[in-house]
Amino acid sequence: MSITLSKTETRLLTEAAGRGGALQLPETMKPMTRQRMLGRFEADGLIAWEARMGRSPT
Image 1: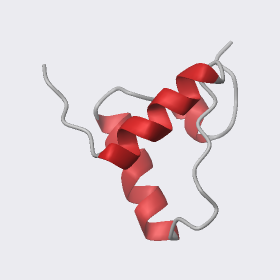
Image 2: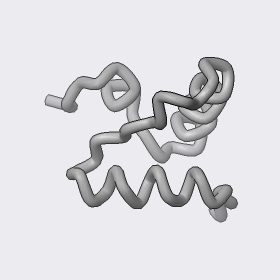
Image 3: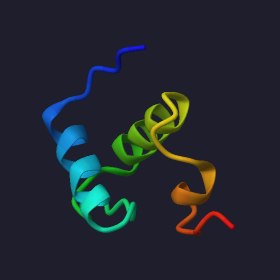
Image 4: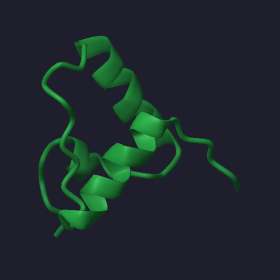
C-alpha cells in the first residue's frame, strides 16, 4: 500500500516522530483543514484515535 503525502503532511508526521509520536498541528490551520487532515491520517492508518484525542495508548 502506498500513501502519497503533501509536503505539509510529511513535515508534520516527521516532526511528530521526533517528539515520540506527538502530533502538533499549526495554530493557524483552519478547523476544517485540521479535521480533514486528521480524518485522512486516521483512515490511512497513520494515527490512532488516541492520538487524535491527545491521549497515549495504554
